[in-house]
Length: 285
Ligand SMILES: Nc1nc2c(ncn2[C@@H]2O[C@H](COP(=O)(O)OP(=O)(O)O)[C@@H](O)[C@H]2O)c(=O)[nH]1
Ligand SMILES: [Mg+2]
Image (cartoon, rainbow, N blue to C red; front, side, top):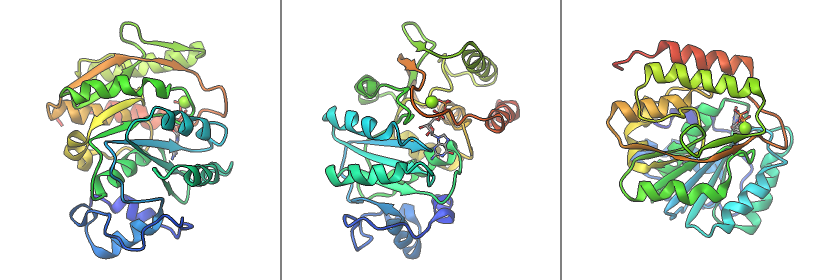
């Protein structure tokens, strides 16, 4: 079950020369079976011999104007990272820009899915891939790829996880957190979503929908089989599952800046999915 989602989406991706010819870099236990293992390693472009302390998952749909600058800034942090881009065959050529970055840096993986399949499944596919490599990273960061999250705030997120927290959420709504350049409507939608969530999920945080986070790999392993979100509700589901399992959660302030390039992918359908998830939450499960 663990990797079925990815397996269902495996396609004949263009191979990068860095992809190892054997599948030995994937964990047999997590990947499940040999044929899947082969399919997965053929679908991910880049060097699967990941041996980094930090895995960064970047979900992208039409982020051609943002992705290169973001990758370069993450590289410039000089942390021990592997960057995994989950792109949904963006028609603006995002994946080709990632391939260009791969020629410059050997720590970039690209998983190109055949069609737009939602932010939620992009994040869980990213988790599964990092859990499946032979040496999974200790920490997994998620970040929007539109530059709303400042990569220079990544070290702030990692520090508490290094001290024993399992999930650190970059929060716009705690003391010293902020949002910039968001429309009144967008801020109102976000605040209402957070208020509704708080009534159902009782984690001690103020921003349930922020996409900038650091997870311990232990937490991701503990909740992966309980994540079923297709779209933006993944942000709530991860916190809810972590909270139910008594993992330690903390938030730290971040500044969220509305994207300057490209368009938001949050559509009315996604808002509907999001609301129906919130209203379907049973407090006990
Ligand atoms: N792979 C993938 N990424 C997505 C999808 N929808 C949104 N994203 C990415 O998720 C991040 C957040 O989306 P965004 O449109 O900025 O949402 P907003 O910040 O809530 O307006 C961005 O990096 C998007 O490119 C999707 O269906 N598939
Ligand atoms: Mg955004």
